[in-house]
Length: 282
Ligand code: E4P
Image 1 (cartoon, rainbow, N blue to C red):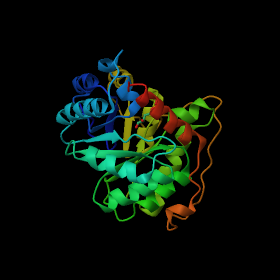
Image 2: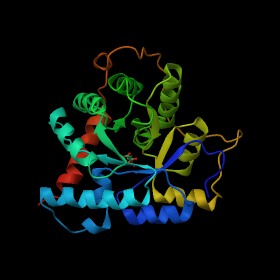
Image 3: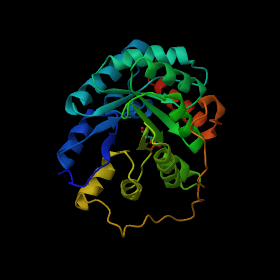
């Protein structure tokens, strides 16, 4: 049952509608779901199979439609194919097509130059976007600047906690910093804590007041075992040997092109998603 004092929207991170059903059985509510090429590749129905390019898009569409039917009041993030050579024009074409699949889509775009160009254009055309693979405050500032004029709720920014932790940086600091920066600027962009790998990531994101959290089924199973509770004021996020990420004072009135949006983990993430997707194709 949804706790009364829960302000954060709760999303499932999965490419499998069976997990959507299971999460709904456990929590009795769900505000949305995020998918990506790697999660689609993990869907049991793709095991041992190879698809043509058309077939894999059809499969993704079928999956997304099934999920959207179960979470009709929520949002479902659908990610465009992008590798290091993909231009904004291709992301725009894919994004418009994917947006037509379901009534409640957010289009996931990589937070690189081409992805931001695509976001600027799609938002102007009234589409909703979720800017993914965010690893720095500068990238989040660029997302704010590139999508100015959009309505609150139409743009999500997805900082990846777990992948920063993996290389020894405190990913939760990035969530905290972006929330603070957006609050100061009264930003229209909603913070979606992503790459959440543990109940502690989840609980601390709740305590920080993230607009949205996406987490895998196992985190919700654990949350359920602990009674689906909101962290109280005494909750403390404990972490070991992680390097703090300091807050940077950034001017969000600048144009997005003025921010340094380069990040090695964004490039690596794009290549990884592309590889998982291409492995599904014969
Ligand atoms: C969600 O939008 C992200 O794609 C996902 O949380 C990434 O998580 P991972 O770093 O565990 O792959």
